[in-house]
Image (cartoon, rainbow, N blue to C red; front, top):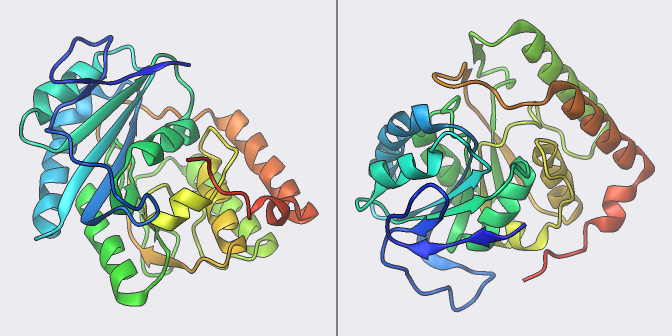
Length: 278
Protein backbone atom coordinates (compact mmCIF):
# COMPACT_ATOMS: atom_id res chain seq x y z
CA UNK A 1 0.00 0.00 0.00
CA UNK A 2 1.38 3.35 -0.98
CA UNK A 3 1.97 6.00 1.67
CA UNK A 4 2.32 9.69 0.82
CA UNK A 5 4.27 12.39 2.62
CA UNK A 6 4.42 16.09 1.70
CA UNK A 7 5.26 19.39 3.41
CA UNK A 8 2.84 21.79 5.07
CA UNK A 9 -0.93 21.66 5.50
CA UNK A 10 -2.83 19.48 3.05
CA UNK A 11 -6.39 18.15 2.67
CA UNK A 12 -7.47 14.90 4.26
CA UNK A 13 -6.37 12.70 1.37
CA UNK A 14 -2.72 13.63 1.80
CA UNK A 15 -0.01 13.41 4.42
CA UNK A 16 2.32 16.02 5.83
CA UNK A 17 5.48 16.88 7.67
CA UNK A 18 4.57 20.26 9.09
CA UNK A 19 7.73 21.27 10.95
CA UNK A 20 10.96 22.21 9.14
CA UNK A 21 12.57 18.82 8.43
CA UNK A 22 15.60 17.90 10.50
CA UNK A 23 18.53 16.00 9.08
CA UNK A 24 18.37 12.23 9.27
CA UNK A 25 20.65 10.79 11.97
CA UNK A 26 24.21 10.23 10.80
CA UNK A 27 24.14 6.81 12.48
CA UNK A 28 20.72 5.19 11.90
CA UNK A 29 21.25 2.87 14.87
CA UNK A 30 22.06 5.74 17.24
CA UNK A 31 19.47 8.32 16.19
CA UNK A 32 19.61 12.04 16.92
CA UNK A 33 21.14 12.64 20.35
CA UNK A 34 18.76 14.23 22.85
CA UNK A 35 15.68 13.57 20.70
CA UNK A 36 12.66 11.58 21.91
CA UNK A 37 10.40 10.31 19.11
CA UNK A 38 6.78 9.43 19.94
CA UNK A 39 4.99 7.17 17.44
CA UNK A 40 1.21 7.61 17.57
CA UNK A 41 -1.05 5.27 15.54
CA UNK A 42 -4.52 6.71 14.91
CA UNK A 43 -7.70 5.52 13.29
CA UNK A 44 -10.80 7.72 13.37
CA UNK A 45 -9.60 9.71 16.40
CA UNK A 46 -10.57 13.23 15.23
CA UNK A 47 -12.76 13.84 18.30
CA UNK A 48 -9.83 13.38 20.67
CA UNK A 49 -7.05 15.32 18.93
CA UNK A 50 -7.33 18.43 21.14
CA UNK A 51 -7.08 16.31 24.30
CA UNK A 52 -4.11 14.46 22.82
CA UNK A 53 -2.35 17.74 22.08
CA UNK A 54 -2.97 19.00 25.61
CA UNK A 55 -1.42 15.86 27.12
CA UNK A 56 1.53 15.95 24.73
CA UNK A 57 2.13 19.56 25.78
CA UNK A 58 2.50 18.33 29.35
CA UNK A 59 4.94 15.69 28.11
CA UNK A 60 7.00 18.32 26.32
CA UNK A 61 7.21 20.32 29.54
CA UNK A 62 8.17 17.23 31.56
CA UNK A 63 11.01 16.32 29.18
CA UNK A 64 12.69 19.68 29.86
CA UNK A 65 15.70 20.10 27.57
CA UNK A 66 15.00 17.08 25.35
CA UNK A 67 13.74 17.56 21.81
CA UNK A 68 10.37 15.95 21.11
CA UNK A 69 9.45 14.56 17.69
CA UNK A 70 5.89 13.36 17.05
CA UNK A 71 5.35 10.68 14.40
CA UNK A 72 1.65 10.29 13.60
CA UNK A 73 0.45 7.33 11.54
CA UNK A 74 -3.12 7.78 10.31
CA UNK A 75 -4.08 4.16 9.73
CA UNK A 76 -6.92 4.48 7.22
CA UNK A 77 -9.10 7.04 9.03
CA UNK A 78 -12.32 8.17 7.37
CA UNK A 79 -13.34 10.92 9.83
CA UNK A 80 -10.85 13.67 8.97
CA UNK A 81 -8.27 12.69 11.58
CA UNK A 82 -5.37 13.86 9.38
CA UNK A 83 -6.95 17.28 8.80
CA UNK A 84 -7.60 17.64 12.52
CA UNK A 85 -4.00 16.85 13.39
CA UNK A 86 -2.75 19.55 11.02
CA UNK A 87 -5.14 22.14 12.40
CA UNK A 88 -4.20 21.42 16.01
CA UNK A 89 -0.47 20.72 15.77
CA UNK A 90 0.68 23.00 12.94
CA UNK A 91 2.85 25.09 13.25
CA UNK A 92 3.60 24.66 16.97
CA UNK A 93 5.06 21.16 16.88
CA UNK A 94 7.86 19.16 15.30
CA UNK A 95 5.75 16.42 13.78
CA UNK A 96 5.43 14.02 10.88
CA UNK A 97 2.17 12.62 9.61
CA UNK A 98 1.95 9.59 7.36
CA UNK A 99 -1.31 8.13 6.16
CA UNK A 100 -2.08 4.52 5.28
CA UNK A 101 -4.74 4.68 2.59
CA UNK A 102 -6.47 1.67 4.19
CA UNK A 103 -6.44 0.29 7.71
CA UNK A 104 -3.40 -1.97 8.07
CA UNK A 105 -3.33 -2.41 11.85
CA UNK A 106 -1.41 -1.12 14.85
CA UNK A 107 1.64 -3.30 14.19
CA UNK A 108 1.86 -2.07 10.60
CA UNK A 109 1.52 1.52 11.87
CA UNK A 110 4.42 0.92 14.26
CA UNK A 111 6.62 -0.41 11.45
CA UNK A 112 5.90 2.73 9.43
CA UNK A 113 6.47 4.94 12.46
CA UNK A 114 9.72 3.25 13.43
CA UNK A 115 11.03 3.87 9.91
CA UNK A 116 10.13 7.59 10.19
CA UNK A 117 11.36 8.20 13.74
CA UNK A 118 14.76 9.85 14.25
CA UNK A 119 15.16 9.92 18.05
CA UNK A 120 17.67 8.00 20.14
CA UNK A 121 14.69 6.88 22.23
CA UNK A 122 11.50 5.89 20.42
CA UNK A 123 8.19 5.71 22.30
CA UNK A 124 4.78 4.37 21.37
CA UNK A 125 1.46 5.53 22.82
CA UNK A 126 -2.29 5.05 22.49
CA UNK A 127 -3.95 8.03 20.79
CA UNK A 128 -6.99 7.68 23.07
CA UNK A 129 -4.97 8.75 26.16
CA UNK A 130 -5.92 5.67 28.19
CA UNK A 131 -2.41 6.20 29.50
CA UNK A 132 -1.74 9.95 29.87
CA UNK A 133 0.98 10.74 27.30
CA UNK A 134 2.81 12.92 29.82
CA UNK A 135 3.56 9.72 31.74
CA UNK A 136 6.04 8.80 28.99
CA UNK A 137 8.53 10.94 30.90
CA UNK A 138 8.56 8.22 33.58
CA UNK A 139 9.39 5.54 31.01
CA UNK A 140 12.17 7.64 29.48
CA UNK A 141 13.59 8.32 32.95
CA UNK A 142 13.47 4.59 33.73
CA UNK A 143 15.61 3.83 30.65
CA UNK A 144 18.10 6.53 31.55
CA UNK A 145 18.37 5.60 35.22
CA UNK A 146 18.57 1.82 34.87
CA UNK A 147 20.23 1.25 31.50
CA UNK A 148 17.30 -0.94 30.40
CA UNK A 149 16.49 -1.27 26.69
CA UNK A 150 12.68 -1.30 26.95
CA UNK A 151 10.40 0.31 29.53
CA UNK A 152 6.74 -0.71 29.37
CA UNK A 153 3.71 0.54 31.30
CA UNK A 154 2.23 -2.10 33.59
CA UNK A 155 -1.32 -1.56 34.90
CA UNK A 156 -1.45 -5.14 36.25
CA UNK A 157 1.57 -4.58 38.48
CA UNK A 158 0.57 -4.76 42.18
CA UNK A 159 1.45 -1.07 42.57
CA UNK A 160 -0.78 0.07 39.68
CA UNK A 161 -4.41 -0.55 38.71
CA UNK A 162 -7.18 -0.16 36.15
CA UNK A 163 -9.97 2.44 36.34
CA UNK A 164 -13.49 1.95 34.87
CA UNK A 165 -12.44 -0.76 32.42
CA UNK A 166 -15.04 -3.00 30.78
CA UNK A 167 -14.99 -6.11 33.04
CA UNK A 168 -14.82 -8.75 30.32
CA UNK A 169 -12.01 -6.94 28.49
CA UNK A 170 -10.09 -6.59 31.74
CA UNK A 171 -10.57 -10.31 32.38
CA UNK A 172 -9.32 -11.12 28.86
CA UNK A 173 -6.22 -8.94 29.12
CA UNK A 174 -5.32 -10.14 32.61
CA UNK A 175 -5.85 -13.72 31.50
CA UNK A 176 -3.51 -13.35 28.55
CA UNK A 177 -0.85 -11.78 30.75
CA UNK A 178 -1.26 -14.68 33.22
CA UNK A 179 -0.63 -17.21 30.44
CA UNK A 180 2.28 -15.28 28.93
CA UNK A 181 3.95 -15.02 32.34
CA UNK A 182 4.00 -18.81 32.54
CA UNK A 183 5.14 -19.70 29.02
CA UNK A 184 7.51 -16.88 28.09
CA UNK A 185 11.03 -15.95 29.23
CA UNK A 186 9.82 -12.42 30.11
CA UNK A 187 8.64 -12.22 33.73
CA UNK A 188 6.48 -9.11 34.03
CA UNK A 189 2.84 -8.47 34.92
CA UNK A 190 1.56 -6.81 31.70
CA UNK A 191 2.39 -7.92 28.14
CA UNK A 192 -0.29 -6.22 26.06
CA UNK A 193 0.40 -2.53 26.73
CA UNK A 194 1.71 -0.51 23.76
CA UNK A 195 2.64 2.42 26.03
CA UNK A 196 6.42 2.02 25.91
CA UNK A 197 9.85 3.56 25.48
CA UNK A 198 12.54 1.78 23.46
CA UNK A 199 16.20 2.47 22.93
CA UNK A 200 16.63 2.92 19.22
CA UNK A 201 18.63 -0.29 18.57
CA UNK A 202 15.62 -2.30 19.75
CA UNK A 203 13.23 -0.93 17.14
CA UNK A 204 15.98 -1.18 14.52
CA UNK A 205 16.84 -4.81 15.26
CA UNK A 206 13.58 -6.49 16.29
CA UNK A 207 11.77 -7.84 13.23
CA UNK A 208 8.19 -8.53 14.31
CA UNK A 209 5.50 -10.10 12.13
CA UNK A 210 2.21 -9.01 13.69
CA UNK A 211 0.34 -6.15 12.03
CA UNK A 212 -2.27 -5.89 14.79
CA UNK A 213 -2.32 -5.52 18.59
CA UNK A 214 -0.43 -8.82 18.98
CA UNK A 215 2.73 -6.87 18.13
CA UNK A 216 2.91 -5.58 21.72
CA UNK A 217 3.66 -9.01 23.16
CA UNK A 218 5.67 -10.19 20.15
CA UNK A 219 8.10 -7.25 20.32
CA UNK A 220 8.76 -7.97 24.01
CA UNK A 221 9.52 -11.64 23.44
CA UNK A 222 11.77 -10.98 20.44
CA UNK A 223 13.65 -8.26 22.32
CA UNK A 224 14.16 -10.63 25.27
CA UNK A 225 15.42 -13.35 22.92
CA UNK A 226 18.04 -10.87 21.68
CA UNK A 227 19.20 -10.28 25.25
CA UNK A 228 17.53 -6.89 25.68
CA UNK A 229 16.72 -5.81 29.22
CA UNK A 230 13.00 -5.16 29.77
CA UNK A 231 11.68 -3.09 32.64
CA UNK A 232 8.04 -2.66 33.66
CA UNK A 233 6.88 0.58 35.25
CA UNK A 234 3.68 0.44 37.37
CA UNK A 235 1.16 2.75 35.72
CA UNK A 236 -2.65 3.02 36.05
CA UNK A 237 -4.84 2.43 32.99
CA UNK A 238 -8.09 4.35 32.55
CA UNK A 239 -11.05 4.03 30.20
CA UNK A 240 -10.76 5.99 26.94
CA UNK A 241 -12.15 9.53 27.10
CA UNK A 242 -13.51 9.82 23.54
CA UNK A 243 -14.27 7.69 20.49
CA UNK A 244 -14.54 3.93 20.66
CA UNK A 245 -12.12 1.04 20.84
CA UNK A 246 -10.83 -0.40 17.53
CA UNK A 247 -9.82 -3.74 19.07
CA UNK A 248 -11.18 -6.72 17.06
CA UNK A 249 -11.75 -9.01 20.02
CA UNK A 250 -11.96 -12.52 18.56
CA UNK A 251 -9.24 -11.90 15.99
CA UNK A 252 -7.01 -10.62 18.80
CA UNK A 253 -7.66 -13.67 20.98
CA UNK A 254 -6.79 -15.98 18.06
CA UNK A 255 -3.64 -13.99 17.38
CA UNK A 256 -2.47 -14.31 20.98
CA UNK A 257 -3.09 -18.07 20.92
CA UNK A 258 -0.97 -18.35 17.79
CA UNK A 259 1.81 -16.34 19.43
CA UNK A 260 1.68 -18.59 22.51
CA UNK A 261 2.01 -21.58 20.17
CA UNK A 262 5.10 -19.99 18.57
CA UNK A 263 6.63 -19.47 22.01
CA UNK A 264 6.00 -23.06 23.05
CA UNK A 265 7.48 -24.37 19.81
CA UNK A 266 10.55 -22.15 20.12
CA UNK A 267 9.91 -20.41 16.82
CA UNK A 268 10.39 -16.92 18.23
CA UNK A 269 13.95 -17.71 19.32
CA UNK A 270 14.85 -18.82 15.80
CA UNK A 271 13.54 -15.55 14.35
CA UNK A 272 14.97 -13.20 16.98
CA UNK A 273 18.30 -12.56 15.26
CA UNK A 274 16.66 -11.19 12.11
CA UNK A 275 17.08 -7.41 11.98
CA UNK A 276 14.46 -5.15 10.47
CA UNK A 277 15.44 -3.99 6.97
CA UNK A 278 16.83 -0.49 6.61
